[in-house]
Image (cartoon, rainbow, N blue to C red; front, side):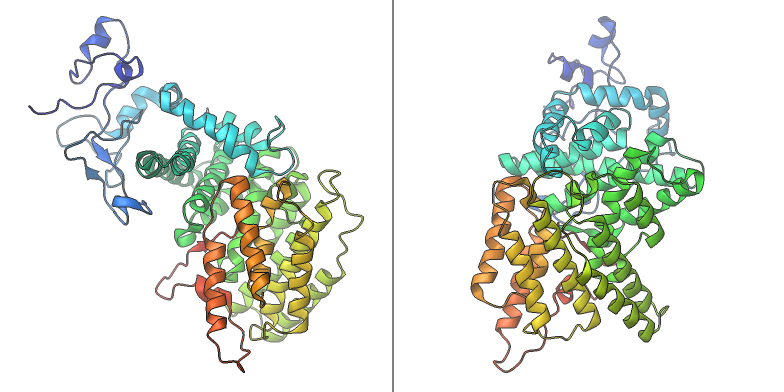
Length: 495
C-alpha cells in the first residue's frame, strides 16, 4: 500500500492522527485550527561532509523512508523561489507572503525538537564561546544571539544547525548530525544570501545587519565543529559587504554594542584565516582599528588575543597581502615587517588591563605575543631553519606561558592558535607530545573537536622527520593548507 506522506505540521506538533488531506488537513479545519501544511519530500545534501551523503550536490528525494520533517519547509537549492510549481501550486515567495516570517519563526520555535536544540545551544555551546563568564547571564552569546534568533529566521536556522551538528556528534545520532543539521544549515545559507542581496539594494535594519554578522559567525563555528575548514572562504567576505554599508550609513561606535561584538569576532576570524595565506585577508585595517577601539574586553574573553597584538599582526598580514598582490615593493614590505617586529618584541604584557583579575591572563597575552612573532619571523624569511635561535626562543616562550594555565581553567580554550604556532616549530618529541596533549585537554573541556591543528602539525612533523640528517630547510606549514587546484582557497580556522 503506497504511503500517504507525512502528517501536517499542526497534527505532528499535537501528536494526533492526521487525515493528510491536501492542500489542508480537514481535521485541523474541523477543530478551528490553522493547518501548518506539509513538508517537501526532499532532503538537502549539498554540504554534507561525512556519512552516506558525503559530496552530494543535489536534493535527493527519499525512497523507502520518510524525509526529515522540519517545520516551515522551503525550496530545494535548485528551485527558483519566484517560479510557480509545475503542478500549479504556490511558489515559495507566495507561501512566505501568506504565512510571513513571524509565523514561520513561531512554528519553528514551537517544534519539540527546536526546544531541545536551543536548550543545548544555551546551556552547553554558549558557555564555551567566552572565557571566565561562560555560564553567566552576562554572556553576550546569550544576550545577543538567542533573542535575535527569535526575530530573524536565518539566524534561528543557523543556531539550530550548529546545535544539531554538535549534539548529534555527542550523542552519536547520525540523523541529527548529518541530516537535520545539514538541512538547517542550508536554510541558513539561503537566508544569508537573501539578506546580503537585499543589502545591495536597500539599507538593512539594525536587527537584519546584526543577524547577518551573527549568522556568519555561527556558520563558521559550525565549520569548526565539523572539520575546522570553511570551504572556499566565502562567509567572511559576505560580511564585509554588509559591514561597508553599515559604516557608510552610520559609522561604528560604542552605541552599536551588538554589532561591534560580532564584527570584532569576525575581524579576528579574518586574521586567523590569513595566517595560512595573507591574500585571504578581507577586512581593511581601518575597520579593524575601529572595531578594536569600540570593542569592550569581551573581545579578549572570546578571542584571547590582546587588541594591541591583534592590530599589529593584522597590519603585518595586510602588508603581506599587498606585497603578494604586487602593490607593495619588497624594500617597503621588509621595512614594514621590521617595524612590526620591533613593536611585538617591545610590547610588555605587564601593567595592561585584562578582562578579569585572574593573574593568568598575562600568560595568555604572552602566548599570543610570541605566536604572532613566529608568524612574523616566517614572513620575514620563510626559509629560516626551525633550529634558529629566535624561532626556538619564541617556541619556548609560548610553551612556558601556556604551561602556567591549568586544565581546569577556561582560559585554556583560548590557546589553540598559540599551541599550534609553537607546534609548527617544535623539534623535540616531548614538546610535540606536550602540544598534542594540551589539544586533547581543550577538546575534553569544550567537547568541540577541531581536527585541523593536530592534522597539519603531524604533516609538518612527518615531513621534517623524513629530511636528511644534514638538511635543516624549513618545512612551511602553510604548504599543507593550500590547494593548488582551487582559485578560491579554503579557510583554515585554527581556533
